[in-house]
Image (cartoon, rainbow, N blue to C red):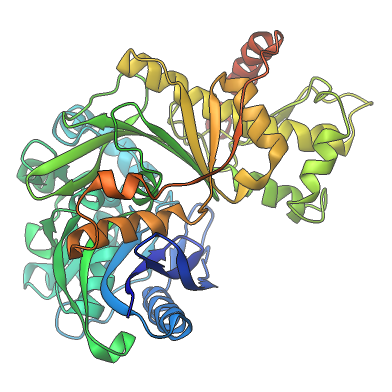
Length: 492
């Protein structure tokens, strides 16, 4: 039987399971949506059991479709900062999973900032003090769920990101990997461990946190009761880092962009922990044994979600319609759309920013609004790329792009024109799952190293910048639009 790897991509809104062969061809796949709930404005939650059940159901479905293969290992990609706290003995969640999108700890972050905690947090973890990360979400559960502090003090609780929750349920192990740990605001990259002083500052007991392992390592064996037969888990990492690996961005200064609900832009920063003075996040890209690779991360909260918003308000019937409408007008008619529907992430980090459409006239049509939305996604991407150039001092020559919006040829050409770099579209769009499979396959011995997996990466299309002389003037106007969006929710 041909060797194969199972890859699980447990994302924010969907869980996918794919089976890849030794040539990185997808033999089978299954996917389903996982619901989100919004108990209050700014709060975003998920039922942890929904995440677990979706992983098991899709893995079983994909394996059944794949048929007779020699399954070597499993790789897991996770949401990143989303948090679960559960009872150590029963495994029952204490509270819903708090999503990475959740902003309920804004006030806690403001309080910590006033107390002078931000400098220490940035020095130790490399991250800004922000509700985006896991730490203040864990703190909120301990402070606000009745009895949580007492249970934690008695050693009866466990906490972690969604990978830790899934591993506890599937493997019976309380573990995480270095990429995910680096997204918590509790991990010290120099120590490659939890930072004791930050734990004390945030009043989070170390005893509730998982053991940290390299991304490519043996995490345990998935019980046969879940997937039908026992299966070693040999890779686990954050979804965007998995996409970086799946895009074969193995050399320093390689950059990938994944367009989903948001846009996630990662630059391979090599083997030295990077720092950023321009609003980017230093993070672990992947690790294997003693070797560790770092990245600079520039996340945009809203990208594909802006297109969904156009559909939700009735401006378009489907995301596919945006291509035709954008091409039906020669420009956006002076309209700019800053898609800060959930605030601005990198490089601005303004949680009080709000979505802003500016430049409307009586002649503005829905086609202009649609074109401005797509261009706004491209302008937002350029903001992050410029911060990367400023931090590294090196130009970016090309981008590898994946995700749903990469199918929109207008957006991809606009991205090339606005950024001035070549845009390479991956042939395998499920690059997050592919990256998890690549790393798991290396861990299981199917491939020896990155040189082998790099040869398996394939390109579908390339877009080259057309040298539009008006781009720089438009980009200056984009900055003016962003300034009008910033701080809006803070205005009394």
